[in-house]
Amino acid sequence: MEISNLIPHIEALIFASEKPLTSLELTELINNAFGFMEDKITLDQIESGIEGIREKYSSEFYPFEVRQSGGGWQFLTKRDYHKTVAQLNGDKFLKRLSSAAIETLAIIAYKQPVTKGEIESIRGVSSDYAVQKLLEKDLIVITGRNEQLPGHPLVYATSKSFMDYFGLNSAEDLPKLKEVFDETMIQPTTITEDGGTSNEETIEDENAVLVVSETGELVEAEVTVETEVEMELESEKEEEQGYEKEEEQEQGDVEEQEQGEDEEKPQENE
Image (cartoon, rainbow, N blue to C red; front, side, top):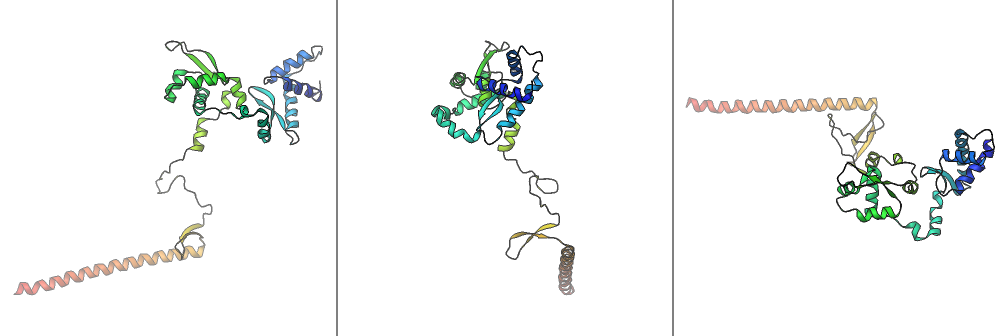
């Protein structure tokens, strides 16, 4: 079957399905529908058809698109129409989870499979109510019991509804904790061996330096060959002046010492 003839059947299945459909499920369903055909539809043909569908609905003309979410393919309205669709479902659509429920859900998502005792040890408070609410909303499921712990407590994990709710295909699609912390945490400033800092903004132009203007402001000035020569001459001049001051001070100290000795000699003769 040609891909152009296959695409409408894929669209019909995704549209009519109550749950996300994987590429393998679409392949099996279409082959069952066309069982009389000698040549079976392959997975590669289905995936090529899906790519064509995605390209088709990516146009701004359509308010919805085909996306892989919740472990399979489904039709979803685009973000631009979020507020419009929210009016259809009223307050139920806009209702959010409590902070306690979000904390509990985050722990389960990143630590799954996890027991209630492990959740409470991380949060530091009882999580009975939060876990119950998450179960009622079908965001988490009970996957069994931990046979290694005393009492064999129940084990919780995220559900397919959770993946669909957050637009994920699996737990591996969750944001890495390191990436989240890198965006929210302020990195400390460390002092390097040469006296600089690791997070200082460096001047892009290597021939630029910071100088103090006549008004006392710190401004960026470009260094040319002429200014480099002037800076070197000024540095040498300052060094010479420093040496002259040291010599004058030493000469003054010697003169004071000699004058003191001359004053002591008459006293000794007397």
